[in-house]
Amino acid sequence: CPNLTSVRGAFLSAYGLTGEIPANLFANNPQLVNVSDCFSGTRGLSGSVPGNLFANCPKLANARWCFENSGIGGNIPENLFANCPVIENIGYLFSNTQISGPLPAGFIKNKKSLVNVDRLFENCNIGGEEDNFNEFPADFFEGLTALQSANYCFSGCRNIKFTLPAGLFKDCVNLKSIDYLFYNCKGIRGGLNSDIFKINGNTYTNAMSVLEGCSGITGTIPADFFEPFVNVKDLSGFFSGCAGLTGEIPAALLQNCTNLIYANRLFKGTGLGKHR
Image (cartoon, rainbow, N blue to C red; front, side, top):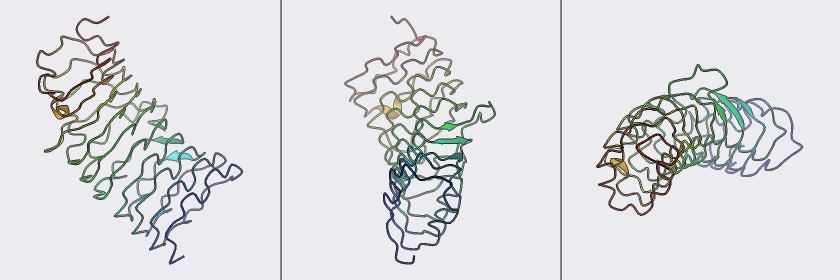
């Protein structure tokens, strides 16, 4: 289909659709731009996402909601967007599916046009049942210089079991919003580096409940941990439920957060300092 530009919602809520997605269904469509909602709600689908599904689709920009709430599972195909250099939006891509396995380091690496990854893996099974995917790829977000929003990206991924690397978003110089980024990811473990969320020359504007419910995080909070959040107005729930956090509250922890208005439930349910 040399002139095909959009298949938005092509199979949206096709509840009777069964079987697997054909391997090259949308491959080699040079004008294809939009596949949003394409398989959304197709609970009868089975199998995994073919790695070549979007092969040679150089103009593909929008894949938002493409597989959300569908029946697909299997591992994340690392090369899904390998031939899509201008992909911009993959928010909700695998939200509420059975996608599982480790995070492939090259899945979105160096996608210079990528703007939105909201709810990308929300409530997925990534990490699997075995404790053998214990390192978050340090370069997973590498080169994403246009990325603006990662809200709820890993929210509800209860099976992920990893430590958070330093400089997670170091290249994401336009990233502003990470609300509920790792919400209820109980398998995250280990201590907190002071530069986990530091970005080269950038600060966030939205950071509610980023690590809420991450009960596996242990140790103390570095004194300069909130430096990247000096422009945030609402830090409510950031560490709520992080029962493994201990130690004293650093005296200068929030002193540079001059725009802060709300810090509700900031340390609720933690072992940090004295709390009710």
